[in-house]
Length: 156
Image 1 (cartoon, helix red, strand yellow):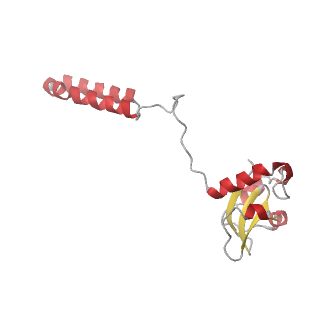
Image 2 (tube, rainbow, N blue to C red):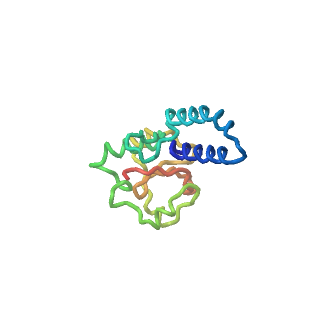
Image 3 (tube, rainbow, N blue to C red):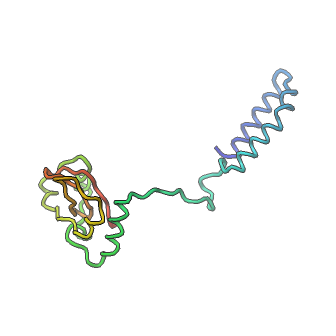
């Protein structure tokens, strides 16, 4: 809520108190408190609009696995292995099938390549019977039955 809307609501409330049932004494009593509250809101930043050019951008916490994969990708952009190259990207329809919990169909299984060893080394060790793979510009964690446990987007 912006300071302007707080002040506007305060003014409307004061007008109602002033005009209804002779509550002028009440208005005189609470006017300083209302002004103090509005000033406190303004100074605390609660009233800043989201369009303020000087406001700081919200900080997003980056997933360590995502960061490790992105760093690796950026360091190897000139020599990407099969499965992570731009020409290996998935279509929108294929992308929709590469999601956590899904089992890879034959089309996506054909596109699966082992994740590079130096990339896998930067990620947490996979659980038993799981492996990291490169598929369509993504790094995935899949089990022995090709069920997707995690998807890390790289290079986008």
